[in-house]
Image: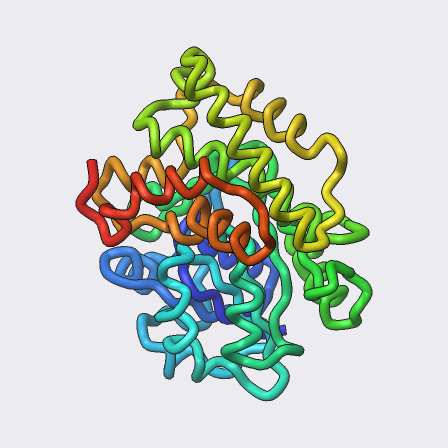
Length: 308
């Protein structure tokens, strides 16, 4: 298959490096100094088990130069999706599948609306990776998994199974799942609790755990997100909230959600894709989400950046 990777940060850069190293035809969309470095020296992945440098077939900041792809991978922030959809449109041919690896639970419907109901897949990334310097991606976690499925949550469709096979052949973890919608929402339950407390509280996770009011908020945020998911028909486990709390208890104290890092750096925020989405989807489903609504309101002035 031919891949167009829209966004070559931590997640997109990791996938691009692994796929190119395995012999796949990959075009990447990047910008600025990062793009210049990829063009000049190649794309380097520093993994926990070594380092590899590859040269994608195309490295560009122009969607017209990507060429038609079999799979368009969207690895960007939620607030950039609308722009990315239009930028990537030249890469979307009659059979192209759109595979998002974004925070939140709404990327797939957006891509389906833009490109066609039968085009959009569900993707869940479980990895910590970032741009260490222009042209260099560093993977910080020992493992990395990328869950892939159709909109019904299944993995049985031939083209979905084909992507999974190619990912695995490239050394990219892509586990079997009965319903990836459950995994998508389970991640959402945890992430919205983590982002709401570490960004809303301007605190690391250790401080959240040590502050009774913030730890109680973490629990309420997880409970609200799980209730919204269930109201929307997602078969979350009975202990979904307990799973989120357990993860929060086990993670290192210095952890902050990417939303908190973006807030501290004065960058645009994906709050509308996290707590804002829980509140919005909750209203639609008739579920009370006052804690998420409060977090979204507190961070709303900084959604376009500038907050510290």
